[in-house]
Figure 1 (tube, rainbow, N blue to C red):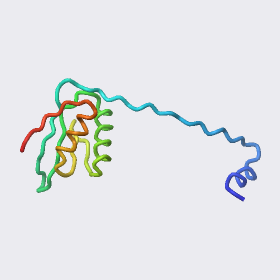
Figure 2: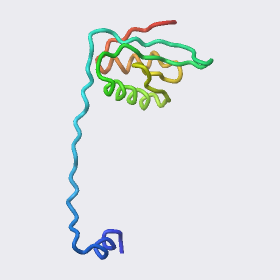
Figure 3: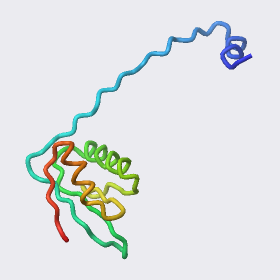
Figure 4: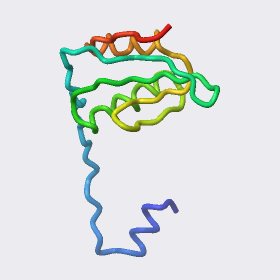
Amino acid sequence: MDLKDQLKNLFPDHEMAPEEAIEQEPHELYVQKEPMICKFEKRKGKATTIIEGYEGTDEDFKILAKEIKTKLSVGGSFKDDSIIIQGDYRDKIMVILKEKGFKVKRVGG
């Protein structure tokens, strides 16, 4: 006896709704004319890459931060209108942002 049969025995009057596939539209990010700044810093002796200069909403910037972190498989955070990525990934981040249509400016080293 599987789980559905057990549930039918416990709740005979309950009708199960058919499962509907919810289609989710891909979220469009605001592409700006001014370049985003991708810079390298050392914080507490550790290398970090910082992305600043996004003019869209904070929610879009958080979505962008999550995409970058998952594509690079690294940790990071979103603070004070900037994305902080652990490690020096400027080149890879610039490629990812250019593929999305952003202009990127490399700052420092």
